[in-house]
Image (cartoon, rainbow, N blue to C red; front, side):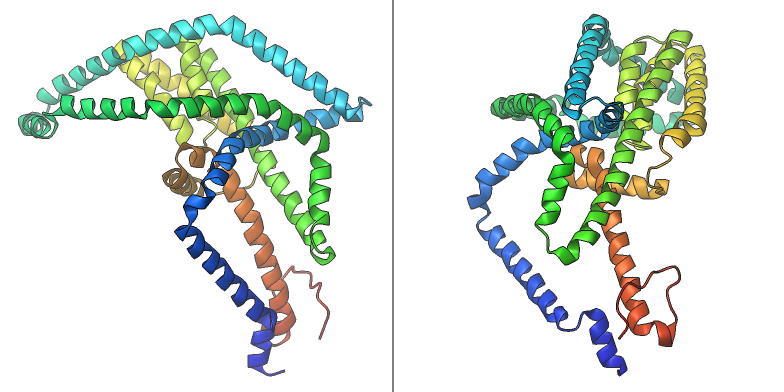
Length: 389
């Protein structure tokens, strides 16, 4: 076999022409869709309506499915285990909401009312410091620049308010989507917990038999990566919120419960979330007193130490190992492309893409070993499952 024919066979042989035809067909389809996309508007509306409850249901599925499996192991029928678990969680959440809602509502109202004052006091403090520091000669120049560029700030704000008023008509559709998500989310979750394995088996039966083994392996790897990430990240975020709440109570931080909840919610997003979560507490601490800021720094360092050395290593043990820089880049790109949804789902999406790329690279190494291994050297630790020529 000469080098050229070997390379053609490595790329797929006759299948290479089929791949080119398939890519051409996909390109033509995208071009046509771009020209007549308005025809598919109803489909887009349907997809955008059912996607949020499906995403919520999958997140809850990964959290609750291990518990349901455990109940099944102790000889509780799966359907009864699901019903008991959902009712128990609904009861617990209802009780927590009823007990904490008045306090949270009071703190949120006070925080919304007083936060502009905190910002104003912070700005006044920074201005006073600048005027009495080495930056004083540049203060007047900077002040004039602000006046020149933001003198029409009321008009700008008015324009934003007018645009917001004009977009009020979208509130009805937003409320509708929220109601649909709340109503359908438990139903989707119930059937995912009950028949999740059957859905997977049915999907595999739709594929040609030759592809089922690889498809099953890919789905298992995706399930492990995404499931462990979601479980671990939510547990870690909850632990951060609880630890911060305890710390805030110890140091007497105002709005302790509200700030801890904000930290728990934003910490679902790794690295960027905790940095965003601490900002309101920093502002309140600076305005309160330097001692409170010092106390906040001690609490934050203690929480980060406990999370980094005890919580995450034990909870996130099965999660994919990704460099922090990679996570930050993924979050920035996904957020720029898809907004807040992209920030929340960027890492799980990266996990799915990573599994696919790893599978394709594994197949690439197998084909390389088959066609070029003997003459150019083999990829190590790759099981060659193909038949020898």
